[in-house]
Structures are given as C-alpha cells and as structure tokens.
Image 1 (cartoon, rainbow, N blue to C red):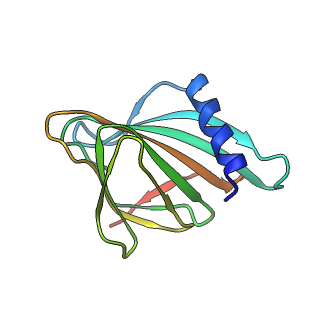
Image 2: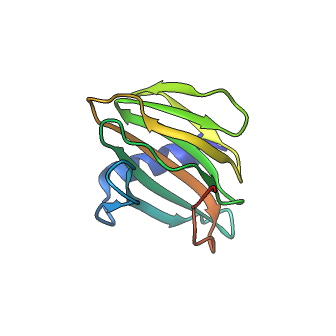
Length: 139
C-alpha cells in the first residue's frame, strides 16, 4: 500500500475523534475506539477506517479474523503488544513499531505483553466501503 495514503490517514486520526470508547466483550479484552473513516477518492469502492485499541494490563483480544477485503497497518502507540497473524510466529512489538496484515488474516494472538502497564495500538484498515464488520471471532 502506498505510504502517501496511510501516513496522512494516521495523522488525521491523531487530530480527530469520531466516537467514544466501546468495551469489546469484558474487562480482560480490549477497548476499541473508532477514530477515522473516509472513502478513498482515487480508489472507488475503498475506504480507510482507523481504530484505536486500548489494552489494560494483561488484557487480550479474542482470536479473530479480519474482513476479506481489509488490508491492515498496525502501529503500537504505547506499551508492548504481542501479535500472531496467520502462520507467522508470535512477535513482540514495542511503541513505535508496526506490522501489516493481509486481507482475510486470522489474528490468533493480540494482547498486552505487560501485566502491569497498559498498551495501545492504532489499526488502519483499507477496506471495501460497503464492508460493515471489520472482525469476526474465531471459534
């Protein structure tokens, strides 16, 4: 994906707040806050959606799959996050580090690596504009 599209979207997110926090599941999981949504003018049918994911100490996301149309760029804002996507090995990402996820990825591990400090990441989705659900739990 072209950095000229992703970088401005990330900056716009830092200046914009579109929704309040929404706890996802229970206290041991993440809190996801929508931060930005915009159609991509030069790519018909595609949009950028950005969410901020807050992890309390020891919190984790449930295993999930991402939308089949979603390319994801994830950037750790604070703390340390352990992530495992598809068949890749689990990896620890520190503040300032990032990774990408291909369309239809399975995210089996996404958690705060610390039991004492919070962690936060920014996830930028390039997704079909009519896509309603960005993630689906894996059973």
